[in-house]
Amino acid sequence: MLSIFSFVSVLALCFALPGACQTRTKAPSGAVVVRPSNPGSGEFTSVAAAINSLPNDSSSRTIFIFPGTYSGQVTINRSGPVTVYGYTSNVQDFNSNQVVLTHSASLGTAGSDDLSGTLRILSNNVKIYNIDIKNTFGVAQTNGQAIALSNYGSRVGIYASRMYSYQDTLYTNKGTHVYLKSYIEGAVDFIFGRLSQAYFEGNTIASKGYGCVTASGRQSNDAGIYLFNNNKIIKASDAFSNVTGDVWLGRPWGSESNFVVANRSQLNKAVWSVWNTATPNTDHVTFAEYNSTGSGVAGVSRPSFSTLLTSSQAAQYTIASAIGSDYISWVDASYLS
Ligand SMILES: *[C@@H]1O[C@H](CO)[C@@H](O)[C@H](O)[C@H]1NC(C)=O
Ligand SMILES: *[C@@H]1O[C@H](CO)[C@@H](O)[C@H](O)[C@H]1NC(C)=O
Ligand SMILES: *[C@@H]1O[C@H](CO)[C@@H](O)[C@H](O)[C@H]1NC(C)=O
Ligand SMILES: *[C@@H]1O[C@H](CO)[C@@H](O)[C@H](O)[C@H]1NC(C)=O
Ligand SMILES: *[C@@H]1O[C@H](CO)[C@@H](O)[C@H](O)[C@H]1NC(C)=O
Image 1 (cartoon, rainbow, N blue to C red):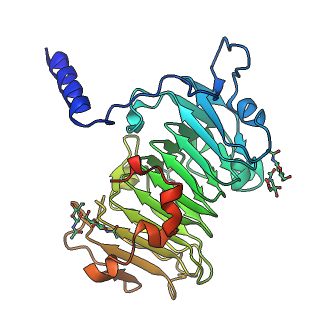
Image 2: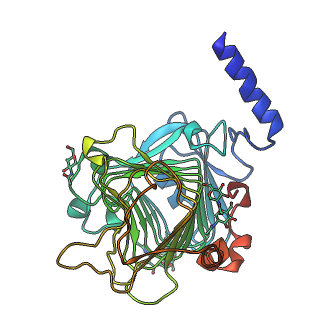
């Protein structure tokens, strides 16, 4: 009986909130289709082959992927816009994702952070919806940088997608990015990069073990920023025991790290870390917080190189200040609160 009642309440939610249970189970017209088996004419069984079939011109192209686990690295580097949709029964909820991209590589085996990425976005105007991206080297190993998503594009949106590794899961390295209603799992420096302007909202950030959530590598006083608004930081369901008490929001990989977090809920009392004892890198960092909530916040002690913003200071940090006021032209607002 319980299941009937929950079914009824899910239906009620779907009717009460239009869009809350929007499905995407058919290829939009004109999309290149990927299926795990028995492809129709013009369809593909490999995501990389589908991407590589797109003409390298300025036209906008769409890929639609049926449920399945697809192994192999995928690189997007064509001139025009690319939108990739995963099949889903609820476009707003990553728990409904049914498409998985997997690849196993590390900096050591591939030669660079970027080259280890399961999904590499090297061009501009890319949207990714309802896709799980795993670096299985990182999921299995606790030593070695292994990127799930390597992002060098401008105007790139990642929506209701999930990224999994251990060290360096999300390489948000260059360009303007949004990560909305997504799931990012890792343990060490698992959101990191040098130059990007990145806005994170409505994500679940899951810590798997001892380490820092972010490692901003900003090296000069440029526009680079990570702005986090309304994200939840939790312990991953497969976390190691050393996650407890040993998760920091960030440490400065670069000497001018710029990271503002507002309205988050926090896992535990540890907040900000030095890069390491010999090279603290804290002289010019902006590690700022506003309105942190959660069980770990009460009585927390913050290091002197961090900042607690006043409400008027916090009001100056907005999605537009982070990624530019033209965000309206490229961000899918149905994933913003
Ligand atoms: C598309 O063309 C550009 C410029 O000619 C080139 O650098 C790039 O590698 C090409 N991308 C692909 C996927 O072929
Ligand atoms: C991606 O494209 C850019 C320019 O369009 C080009 O300079 C670069 O070499 C390409 N990268 C790869 C890995 O193909
Ligand atoms: C955390 O625990 C995992 C699993 O036992 C281990 O591999 C990792 O090295 C530990 N991290 C640290 C910093 O001790
Ligand atoms: C924090 O949340 C409040 C209320 O939703 C919002 O008005 C404000 O813009 C948020 N702060 C930042 C820095 O995003
Ligand atoms: C603080 O954050 C919570 C969400 O965590 C939000 O509901 C509330 O409006 C925020 N308060 C302010 C003053 O921004």
